[in-house]
Amino acid sequence: MSIIQIEHLKKSFGDNLVLKDISMNVNKGEVVTIIGASGSGKSTFLRCINLLETPTDGKILYNGENVLAPGYDLPKYRTHLGMVFQSFNLFNNLNVLQNCMTGQLTVLKRDEKTARATALENLKKVGMDRFIDAKPAQLSGGQKQRVAIARALSMDPEVMLFDEPTSALDPEMVGDVLGIMKELANSGLTMVIVTHEMAFAKEVSDRVIFMDKGLIAEEGTADDIFIHPKEARTKEFLHRVLHPEP
Image 1 (cartoon, rainbow, N blue to C red):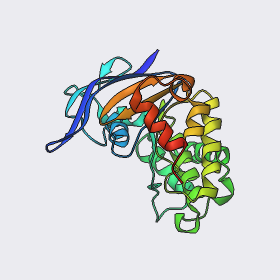
Image 2 (cartoon, helix red, strand yellow):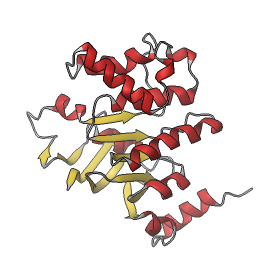
Image 3 (tube, helix red, strand yellow):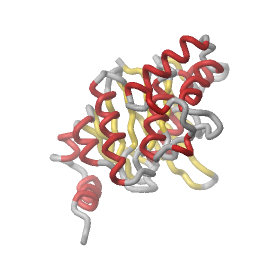
Image 4 (cartoon, helix red, strand yellow):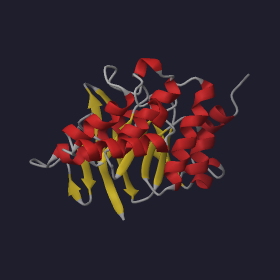
């Protein structure tokens, strides 16, 4: 069953057409990874899904309803999508626990006791429950990203979106964050992940989408894309990424 259906999505910035014509579905419980070279439109596409960027044309259907239609309740739609950014986007003036509670209190209107319990449960899930009183400045990049994941999970999203969540991390911290994402993938959470971690994409994906120059050049299972790619562009990209020149 499709939670999100994208139909003929386009996005331009001035004269620059970044997304040319994107159509795809995200099914319940599915892990979809989006790969491609820098500048192929991956992050812009993800930001259009949760409307951080407003599409220029096309439709985004959430449970069958077009969220771009006039009068649609956009704030409510956004509460169904969790977003984890490259750069963490934590509130620096709040401690770890407060970071994971504030959205629940202000957006979901949960009471403080419920919000605290939910935050603690998700911080424990990502191994950050011992740091509830720490401010972001006291945390490593990997710890900040784990808090960011806990914060997104605390909103009980139907779909989690990850925009290159390991790209700002030191190499030794990448494994921690990917490990947590693997656990989430195995738990049945619906996830859309923009990533340059090919081994991770191959391991967790139900479906892999290869984007090139603002279009979906190829999509399929992890084996389809990584072992039996059909398109020359896909083959060239994977060769470049998996076998870099010394």
